[in-house]
Length: 123
Length: 373
Image (tube, rainbow over all chains, first blue to last red):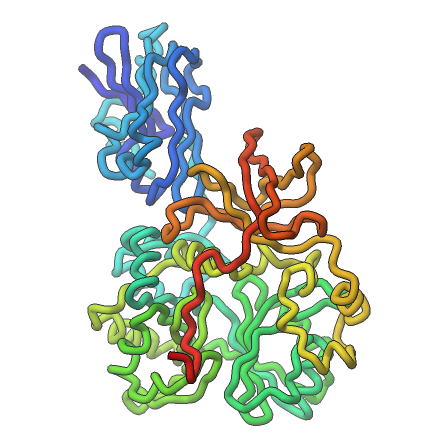
C-alpha cells in the first residue's frame, strides 16, 4: 500500500486496483477551519486533473482535483456531516473518495511521501 | 487543490510580534496582516465569549482641525457634526459629489477638532479627498506614528480595566485620553464585532508593550483578520470595498441613521439631491441580510435571482457563521425583494441555493449602553 502526492496537495493511496483520495495535512493547514466539503457521487467517471470535489474553509472555496483517472466507487459521507474531520484527520478519516483506477501508469508522475515533504518545504 | 499566492507589502508596527505569536500573515490593504493565529473559528468564538485583541493599525487615523471644522466636514459627510457632543463618536460616510460612498469612518469630536478613523485600503484616497475638498484653512494630519488596537468581547472591559483603570466608565461611542504607565492612550468604547469593546490609539513604538501586557491577561488572545470578518458579518456590519463602494449610497446601504435630522431638512452635503430623493422615494436597490439554506457558504460575487431566475442583485459578503453554525450572507437586491421573508435563489459557480431575506444583525449586538442593565 503506497501513498502518492500531487503538486496540488492531494494524496492517493493505492490498494490493488482501487485508490483512496484526500487532501494532505499541509493543504488542510493552509485552508484553516473547513466548514463544508462535497465528495463526488459513486459512478462518476473522472479524468486525471479533473475537478472532483469541493472543500470550503471559513475563508475560501477550493477545488480538489482527481490525482488519477477512473470511476468513483464511493464518496465519504463523513466529510459532509462533519467537515472538521478533514482538519483533524486529513490522511485518515477525512478521505474524500475511493476510485477504481483505470490507468495505473498515471501514478508514475506523482510524488512519494518523502518527495512531497521536500516539495512542501520548498514552497 | 487550488491555492492563491499574493505579493508581500508594507509591515505593521506589530509585524514581528504577530509572527512570534504564530500568526499566518497575508496581504491586506497594502500591509502584511495576521489572518489567523490558532484558527478562525476558535478566535471568533473566543471574541464572542471572552476578549480578543485585534491589530487594526492599517486603518488611517486622521486629525482634522482648523477653522470651523465641524461645518467644513458637513460638506463631505451627512452627519450633524455641529451638534456632535465633545468626546462622542459618530459613524459616518465620506461621500462623492454624486452621493456614492467613498469610505465609511468614525469621527470623534475633540474640542473643536475631529479625530477620524478611516479604512486602511482607502486611507490615502480619503486623505486626498479631504485635503482637496475641505477649505484651505482646515488641515488634515495623518497620524502615521499611531498604532491602533481593538479589544473586543464581553470581558474586554474587565481585561482593559486592570491596566487602564477608569476605562469601564466610558459609554458606547465615547472616547477620551487615558494614562498608561505615564503614556497617553486615546481609548474609545467602539469596534466592529457587535460586541462590547474598545479601540486604543497608541504610539507605534509602545504598541508591542501594550499588546504584550494585554495578552498577559488569560482573558485575552490575539485575533486575526479572518475572525474580524466573520464577526462583523454576523453583526450585519458592512465592509467597505465589499458591501459599500462608490456605486452605493447611504440609503441603498441601509445606513440612513448616519444622515441626521437637520441634514435631511437642510441638505448641503455631497450628493444630497440624490440621497434625499432616495430617502423620500426609496432606493432602486437595497442591502439586505440573507439566510442561506444548507451548509455551503455562498460568498461575494454570487448572483441573487428571483423565483423566475431573473438576476435581481448580488451577494457582497458571505460566509459560514461560527455562532449560528450555518452560512449567512449580505447583498444588494432590487426594491421589490427587500421585505424580510422574501424567498430568493443565489447562484454560485453554476449551482443554485435557496435563501431568505432576513433582518440584520444575524447575531444580536451587545454594546455597552449607559443606563442599560
